[in-house]
Length: 89
Image (tube, rainbow, N blue to C red):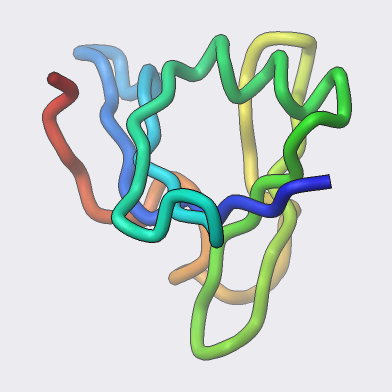
């Protein structure tokens, strides 16, 4: 299974994540994905997504079949919603 690290997010006007920017060994410069693509990749176990912070990795999971979230912990910096924003192409 491929592991991708989500580094940036894009949110809509309601604050819902719509896109992510993720890096991997195959795509070290990063690739833009829709939230729907990420949900599909996690659900089908094609790709494992994580958020990295100071060498630690926090898994990203699917919630209610349509949202993505990092696994809860006490580290604010590895929450998906706290990642830097980007504008999708």
